[in-house]
Image (tube, rainbow, N blue to C red; front, side):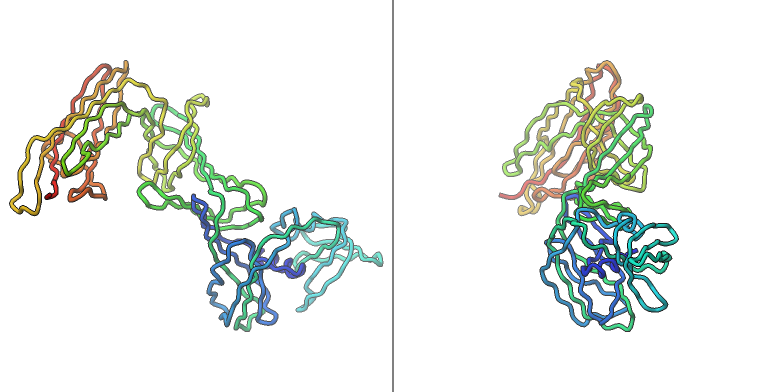
Length: 438
C-alpha cells in the first residue's frame, strides 16, 4: 500500500512519505514516523515531509547505509480532496477522464494514455484516441497520473530530504521521524447505571482534524497522570481522514461502583517554625467510586452519567484511572454531612542530640455528623506532616506519601465507615512531628 502511494507521487513529480506512526500526547505534543518503500534508481532519493517543524532525520534501516543526507525548507502541493488509500478508489474518482497509466510489462515499466471507461476489482478498461479498448489487470498497475481539469491546488510548508544510500537493492524502506505540535486529543465517557453496584462504561477518543489522510497509522495516545506517571493506549491500524475529526472507540465494558461521600481534609500544620496549628470544618463530596477492572487505563475526560432508564443524571470530569485502581466521579452535593477537625499539642521534648531538634506529639479529633435520612458510606483522607503512631490510629490506614516537609515524612490517614441516619462519629489519631533547631 505504501509502495503504491509513493509510485503515484513519483508520477506527479512530488514524493511525500505517508504517516505510519503517531505518538500523541494529551497536551498536543506529537512524535511521528513517516515511512514507505520507494524505488532507488540512482541510489539518491529526494522525499518531501509535510509540516513547518523540521524532522529529526532518517531512521536507520538494515537493508542499506546512508552515506550522507541533507534537509532544506520546501513546499508541497495539495488538492482539496484527500488521496484515497488505494489505487482503485483513486481511479473511481476519475472515470471518464483522460489518464496516464503506468503498468508492468515483463520486467519493465510502460505508460499508456486513454479515457478511463471502467474500474473493476480485476482491472481497468481504457479507450485510446484511436478507439482501441485496452484491458489492464489490477496486478500489473503501478501508478496513475491525471492532469488538467482546473483543480484548485494549495501550497503547504514542507521539508525536502535528500538521501544518498549504499545498497544494491532496487527499492528501500525510508523512515523519517520528528516532533511536532498538534491540537490536543480528548476523551469522552458515557456511564450508565446497571444497578446498585455495576455501571456500563463507553469511552471514545476524539482526534482533531489533520491536514492529510493517513491509513494505516499505528497510533499511540499518551496522558500524564496526577502522580506524574504516563498512561498509554496502543491503537494499531487506524484511519485518519483529512479535514475532519476522527472518533475512535477506546473502551466498552462494565465495571463495579459504589456511591459514597468523600472528604479530603487539609494538613492542619501551617508552620513548623514556629509550630502553628489551624482548625477546619466543612462537608464531603458525593461521588461514585469506580474500580477499573480492565487491563486498559481509563483516560481523563468529560463524562455523562445516565440512570438505569438512560436519562441524564450528571455531567462532569472523570479522572484518569489506571488498571486495578479507583477513581471518583462527582455527583451533585447534598449538604447533610458535617465535619469538624481539630488538632492540639499534647507533648514536647528535646532530643538528646541538640542539633536534631524538638519532637512534638500532636493529637487530632475528627467529628462527623450525618444529617441525612439514609445510611451514608464515607471515605475520609487526611494528610499529616510527621510519623503516625500506629497504636493510636483506631481503624485508620496510614499510607506514606513521596514528598517531605522539612525533616518530616508525609502520610495520608484514611478512614472508611458507614454512618446511620442521624449518627455522629468521632475519630481520633496521634502523630509525632520533628521541629527544626532554630
